[in-house]
Length: 324
Image 1 (tube, rainbow, N blue to C red):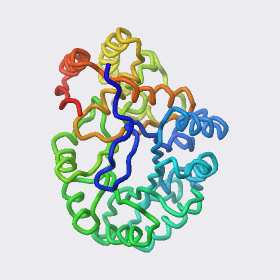
Image 2 (image 1 turned 90 degrees about the horizontal axis):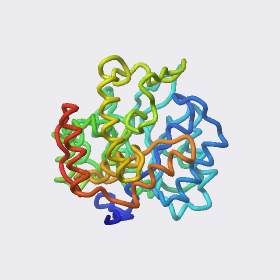
Image 3 (image 1 turned 135 degrees about the vertical axis):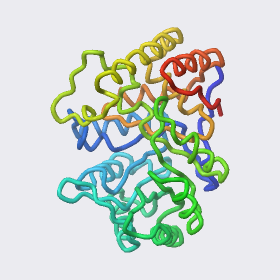
């Protein structure tokens, strides 16, 4: 099997990132259970040791910025070896995330993020989501100013429509777009992804394992503990849960034949899809990020991809768009 490219260009920025990145939301423990600081720090170290160079966080990851602080504390000595993406425009208020894309707020949150991270710049700064109360051009202009000051090297936008991508890009050229994307949620293939390909904007996708559903670790009779945020999603309930479990079992058969885990196979498939630059893999324990990082070391064959396409068809999904 051909080994995947170890680094990929992040749009036109000149920055290169690994095709598997670490998503640093779970290490805060806000929506994940059984999270400890010790394990979270060990997970960050394990990601770096496994060859991951791209770490994705946000101002609102943790009610007191725990995610950014932890990255700075654990990986600060490797600052010149890693790429950091963070986001502004969402913050915690009364245990809810609140939109605020005003330029003044974005400038302040960026400064606070830099302080938490213990760095003088971040390679990528996203508007976490468009703020309905603020013209998008104003938010984009603020991030362009941050680039002009050198505090930010490249701009990103998350959770946006094609129209919003184009509006932002006209004011502040985008380097990256961050949507959700996985085998069972591929809406961007018909809209945002073609736009990104046409404008050389990197797609850094979250939920590649669909909140753990596609990791192959949840048994059919799994009961979510109180406080586990996944229980509210339809994909984990009723007939959808049964169909998704059937699909995972088909993936398991393919993975077993390759001597791989389901998660390893799913991430490998994800980073092979046309237009996908990197998959953000959340983790709260070292063994989780080691498993997904291993997807960078091998590549599914044409026969393997055809078998996955057949499983997708049987699940009512379109076949894959093809390998990069």
